[in-house]
Image (cartoon, rainbow over all chains, first blue to last red; front, side, top):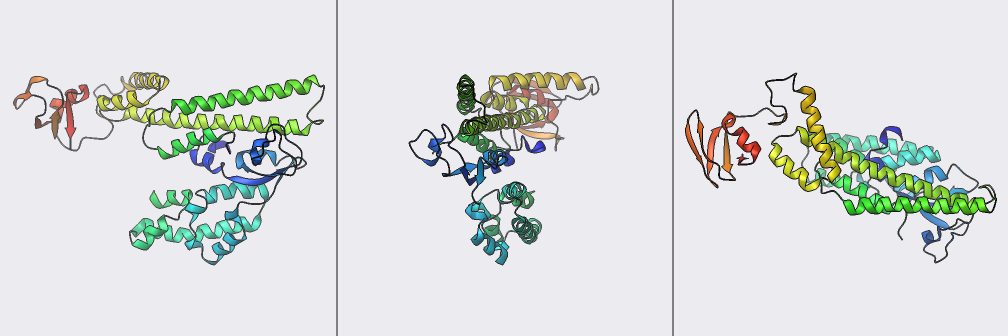
Length: 156
Length: 200
């Protein structure tokens, strides 16, 4: 965290949700799975924002991350490997990289790390092209598909 | 499904939307986030008290431990959003102090800032003037902004009647609604006081 504490983008990126499981009944969190129970039963899958997950995951006997959001799933991964420049990050997750980096630090997902890096490099070429001489129809469309980090590069 | 931290998230999103302007202070949302923090703290306190009353520790009741942890994290998150929101606004207020035309700026600040921000605005201005005045005696520090003027002559429109003024080039009759092409230095104070407006 450190320098990012006051960073609005970092705050927004940490709001992305992950499927998780508590390994015990948690008092007063019943509303999370839409049940009328007061308590959250053990082993119920709930979606929690990353700012909760990050700390809770340090207690593996009480809490477990049960998968990744869809936009880091196999389908998007293979699409991203096939053609990184035609993926619309804006509609998938506007903080694709920022949140991705946070995720891989927590979960140690090396393939994901590598994929993010590759995708960023591949897309960066188009972004630089746009920044230097861009206003064609195609480029404007591409600009709509950038995530927040990429936009910073494209616009400034 | 509403969740702890959702209100704070709204505040952060608002800050993101309004990076380069000073939007009206969102008192309502700030209050509701503060309320949430207080409620969270009360809940954890209650849970701790009941735990202690039973003579138990967290290890005996992992469910309660999780609940308290979630509440603490949510409160921290709420605070982070509040701080970030206010910090971005303060940075903007500071910029406004340095920007041109105090009359216009002051109007913007007065309309959008909270009472505390207004106080900060005035104090900061005083401090800036106090710190640099003796170094640059000839410069009107916060008068005209930091951008150098582009022309000697500017086009101004009269917003409020202010009678006749004498200039090097003769008499100007400044009646409301009329427009003049005049030397910048002749009218700068009038612009600052809000009688004239610079039209480009």
